[in-house]
Image (cartoon, rainbow, N blue to C red; front, side, top):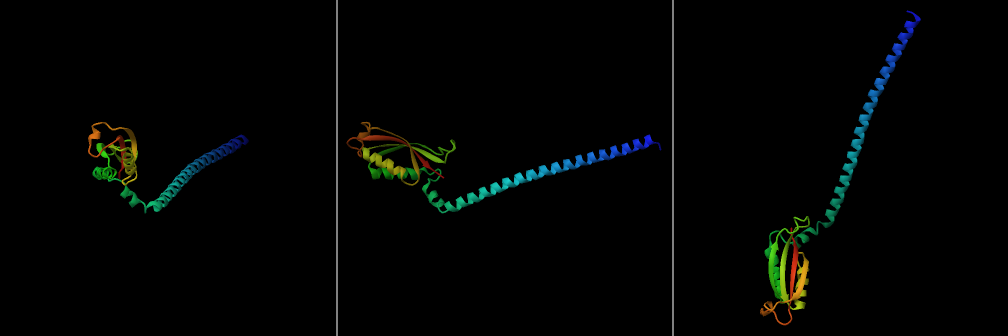
Length: 183
């Protein structure tokens, strides 16, 4: 074999070895990169799971703190579709405060569509002495079931309302919208 042939043979062998090294290194680096991506995804999932675990632990602590209050809260909310008990409460409070009342529109699930807590909306018209009407409004807001006065409009009572046997003297009329929270 001549010098030239040996040179080309060595050159071919060197090129084959270098090609094999490049191919093997590329193959190994792609395997390492894929494994690295899997490790990064696993770390992200682990971090997400740890965050969820901490969130669940915090929620459990909050529940443990308030679990004794839940029955009290349930007792203070109006049962869904049980408007009669609130109407009876209004009747009793009207008798206690010596006011004439009229319950108009009752809307069940007033807050469900707006995304708030479930509630029933009552429109009450109350007529009586100014102090009695204010006492009635105060009692409505501070009794169970929990209620919130949404709007109040006070005006002098009409002459026809003053003919009521319960009413005498200077009378005022309160038109109120009362939101009663339900469960």
